[in-house]
Image (cartoon, rainbow, N blue to C red):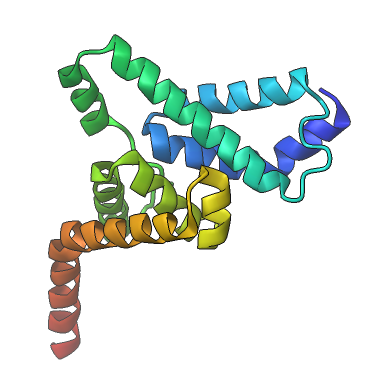
Length: 179
């Protein structure tokens, strides 16, 4: 592996893998996407030369590979099998030893899994990569307004999905503080 490719991997692989996992919802698929992205970079060493924002380009490449993988899978699998795979997918957050924290992470992963991939990707880029709507627009090839509206719709859906957990946590906290 050339030194430049190793440096690029060290700098960006974690973010690219997290995005791929968020889109595909399967660890093995995310690894395949990451392998494909770095395979392309190895085959075309000058691909990132002269780019103003190499990370944005890599995120876009990763997103496109993940979407392509989902399309290929959808064409191969029956819709019922795809829904089963989505429901049984692991969540993209590290495990926690605390049961309440683990429950929150599981609920958040489940809520993210309900979002359409386009909205889930925008949420991932905004929250985990701290990207601006301009950056997200560049990565996904959409307008900043479209990025902002996808984010807003996704947050509204997450709020509805996570409201019961929020209420439970709030009630538990209030009960423990009033004792």
